[in-house]
Every structure is written in structure tokens, then in C-alpha cells.
Image 1: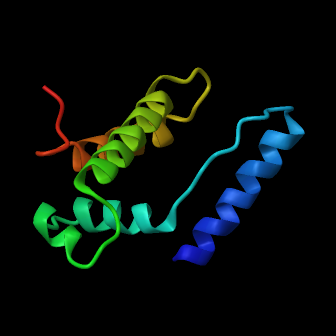
Image 2: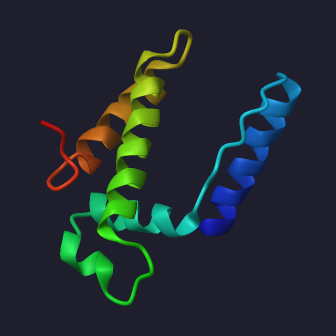
Length: 101
């Protein structure tokens, strides 16, 4: 749910603050809903009914998500489970028109 995601984001921000990391992790719950719809087999065209985001906005958000997930696959010391789940998520997101050549 959106509230659980916000709680997780708060914990991430606190961990960043504790470690002296000044980079703010931007999160848009609307993009999260689009990604969830997409990975569950939703059709690309169905995401643009009465929405304020353009196709370019969504492509950028999806590709940024893939980029972050790829980092989880290569970070030293990250658990095998997180790396595996990140890889699975990449495979679920990375389909046409998002898929890179």
C-alpha cells in the first residue's frame, strides 16, 4: 500500500541521514502504481487514460527504476535475495516499449 511505501521511504531517509548521505530519494506513488500495473501484465496504452503523465514521463521513470534495480544487483555486501529480487523486477519491467536494445 501507499502508506507502507511511505513508511519504508521514511526509514530510508533516516538511514541516509544517519550515514551522512545528502541525496534525497524522490518517490512518486503514482509512478509506483504504474510500475505495479505494468509488471502485472498491463497494456501500455491503458496507462494513459485520463492521466497527467506523458509516455516520455513514464518511460523515464521506468528506466530510472531499472537503473536503481541494476545497482542493487551489483552493490558489494547486498544480500543475494535482494539482488535476485532486483533482477526479477528488472525482467518484469523491461519489456516493449521500455526494453532497451
